[in-house]
Image (tube, rainbow over all chains, first blue to last red; front, side):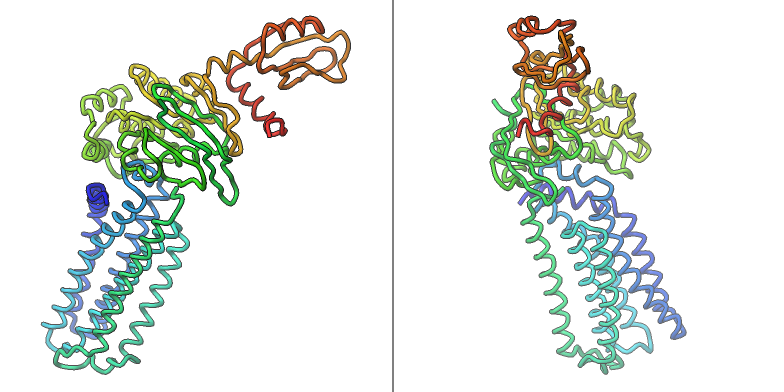
Length: 225
Length: 295
């Protein structure tokens, strides 16, 4: 594996998207401030919506910008003229995208857990829900990225966006209303239900399988431009 | 020695097939690949770049088997194509820094000289460049790292005539100073005629010709003749096409020879013998191919 070139591609994508990372981080911080300082349920709800929206939008923005636009704006032939293989290009894209997404994602996850843990009146039982919901957003992002890379199509990527958006809302409903851990959100102490561990592992495994499959499909392509 | 060697290369797409072909680009030569839109030029070039894996056949570029050894081969290839764009929101300087950090052969002084010659500025964002300037910037990025093999896939497509002339003449002025191996594809025969040592014609996935340009041009002739009476059928050896009406006809021959001229003079009155431009030859070859003569 040509690590030198993969690193070059990752640094290149980071450089071009540093503004995006900062913008979404700032928007995420605004949502965390709302969550922390909100005195009414309405403002707290607004903060939650903003937090989820920021992370979902970041994922969409990244997949479109780093994969679809590279093809649409014809900068892909420039990159593929460099001494790399298609597999190395795919590795570079996956690493760069995960890195760019995970930095704000991890900051906002930590921030949200901090808000729940320190804001008076919020039950600690919410923490596993926060982690699982943000984990679902991360999984959705992996799906969008995989579809963008494999299909090379804006249409299929939009289909992935719609799918993950519906999936997130269904998951949100399921987690709070129908899952075996549904009643634990109001617990005053932090007890992580076994079902939460199971879901978190399933989310992580699904993300790894999706990205692994993407890499495998890309490696089998016989033409790339 | 061959810089690029295609052996029995075949690639099938749903709506296009590159028929099994053998083609070589020799070291030290400028090879022009001419063909209309959709002829298969870009497919052939993408196979050489390792971006398309052929269904059958072998491709070697600078001694490397493609696409398996594409990383090694692409270290020594400079590629500019009509559908290649640089990053619009980055400066030319960023692109030069990016390329120089990848290729050890980057020559900063040469990059400066080319910037002056092409009249482009390092600090300007690429989105502020005209299309002609963007093409020049792409050419600069490959020339300044002195690759062994240059592959230009229709670099002048989409340029207005002035910009096209500027790009081709400046590119050639630079290239003719050096010993370079170049594969230059174009649908514009004038560009190729101006620069190529060797030419290949391609149409509908078939390679119609692959020869030294001068030898090839020399073989073709257009002959204006007057028949003693209106001919019902024109039948001469090596006749490619005939046009005109009544007794006055224009005949195109390949190959043409003095013996053929004597034969013509025995049967008709020859009024003029002319050489053909590459474009005229290309049209004649493609027309003949499409009429099934070469199938």
